[in-house]
Length: 285
Length: 267
Image (cartoon, rainbow over all chains, first blue to last red; front, side, top):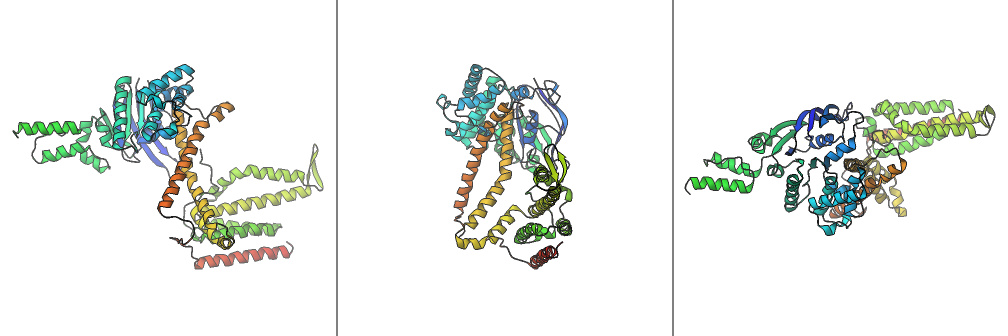
């Protein structure tokens, strides 16, 4: 079950003076089970890109294959594709509309034509996966807190049992605690449900800790594609396009330049901390 | 989806018309509309047509662009013409079943069609060359005297500009919510009418909620900047008449006088 993108180009308002080349000949393979961080500055085309992946936007040229099948072929069932490639939009809580949380989560499965009981089972499962307290399930979605609303909305996509889950800036507008909670939840879901995750973000710190592959987009093109450690060695190039490596990389690079023989590919505070301690111990402090 | 709406849209370019004071354009449009009803003969309509063509020329807006906005009005225009042709009493020309096309009806319908087309072209020329904000400023200034009669002119024009500003925002929002629901398997293009109406609920509920949220935020932001209506409020760009604006008024007066003269002369 893999997603493959060949020579994708998307042009907004083609043929007018306002035409914008949002995606420029992108080719990509997304194999099963990866946790991908898709990073780029505002306007780099990352949101447009993910919307082409489940057929919401039809590319100007190029092809997208899901399990080897062209998704824009005639008679291709887009509904099944959208169930398999789940897309959680930015501020997903703005899509909630039902009278209670569980009915809202059931909206997706219902659209797939499943039975009432199966819809309910899937909804419960999804709500448990996002860690939303059972007491909230019968509440109106509009009575929940911001973080809870976002979980409920993510559950709404999860209930369709996607094989790939794409999250577009899932931490936008959350405080640091809410951000960590959502990101930990995503990691937990990936491990438990064996999904492929594509996490879209403009913040390297968001993805550094969680992703095992990072794709950097700039001006509609893929600029870098590799493991976090590989990508972050190019910190000066990242800065040129308005991004930055995680803070820890900078600290370690600074230490190295000033004579401390540390490895610079430690991305989280804990890893960096133990690396510095190791070097210090070796030096006999 | 919303690409075809040109009526009431601003066309960004530079021209004499774009630079004119919005009050001149507002009053000018009204004057033109009135004068369309002053003239009632072929020479009169030709005169009004030439004036309009000259203005379109001056505006630097491509003629094709203006015509595109007319398409949506075409249907209404056709219906008006047909009704007038058939339902005006007078000397019958052709009979179709129980209905007859009358001579008076045809003349009336043609006159009506010309007036309507000029009317729409004239007013869309105003909106094409004037930004909505300029237009509401002009409206506030022109209706200013009504303040003495306790008409809340400033508040009305403020509401108008907010409403206009919100149109593109809400369109974008609609697009976003629609996509989010399609990603959850919603079907907005079902052939079944009942299903299609039911599909609007997941779109309209979030849309209304977001409209209220935005309105709330805006009210809060305005209050945070001490907005308290009209009293003591000054403008960053007050409307000031320039020499060209007076020239425009002079041409406008001459135009109306010509129309009146044509009418009196019996043309």
